[in-house]
Image (cartoon, rainbow, N blue to C red; front, side, top):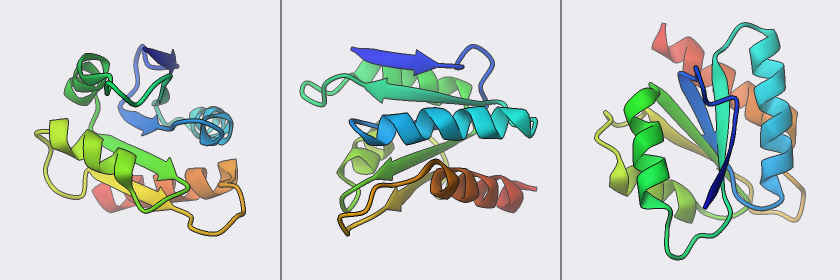
Length: 117
């Protein structure tokens, strides 16, 4: 129900659905080149929501970024399952017709990581 990429040792997870998944995969590669233990989960379907794989991921990572081309519906589903402090799950929302780029995802991830330190 989900595709995982580099989640074996990940401490930072990007949850992306649909076309954003390609940019997210590239962002994971960029983050790993900089020494960040990043990984990605891409749900294949949203209904029924893949509760158990997402809960498993939430138990293993410290931060989650959910890039979406909407107002944050997927992020809200991830937050609903989380027992993380507020701010550990953040969204990157784009509401215009442009695609979310790997660079945008990378920059948001680095912003989240820098606030952690």
